[in-house]
Length: 318
Image (cartoon, rainbow, N blue to C red; front, side, top):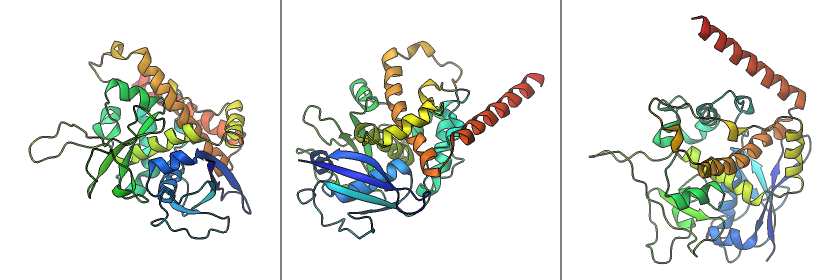
């Protein structure tokens, strides 16, 4: 049926420079949204952290987002024009001395303005309800391995009705919708809606995961599934070979008193590792798009290590 090739404009290079970002089977793009152009727009935003628009040519011609339905959508080349700066996580914090809390804090600060989020709101640490979700074991494994991920609508590009729902469920109307989308088909259930149970009581609704984190995870999962392979992965491999691959999988949570470290199974660590690989790849895109040289990145990491060492020394002297 052909492929949907998505290219990202690289504004850090003079002239038209396009990065072949994704190669998506046409059937997947048609299956996951009633309006694939709107879905592509959100998908690239989730990866690069910059709102923009989709075009079918390099000149930036407009497309009909609303009336291009999945049955009319065709394979071919599509181009994403960012309307603002890219907002990848700063790889400087991805040092093996830092915790996953630092990772989340950096992510929130980089993209907070896109969601109207106060970047200082992460007062509960890594285990805050807004920072993560707890899934049934079978879904947890599939989420970690990139077989499925959660899409929250509406967002800047998609409405709730743009996403297919289960055949035996009601048509979604208004309000927020959380959809568990299967990038790899499983049990022939493409888009079951998710419901969250929280600790809120009385008139207060339970807290929900932040859109900021769900969107980033959606982008990371999609990139891992559909990265174009040749070109983009070669660029990332070059950076990795230069010693700049962020080691997200090696980060350890800042444990709270009473945490049972033995309760984490090896399978859970494997799941985190799979997702981390996708996050690593997205982080490396920042270097390429910002035109950062290996020497500059290495110097940033050395400076960060020196700052960390000085903080540790002061703590021991106190």
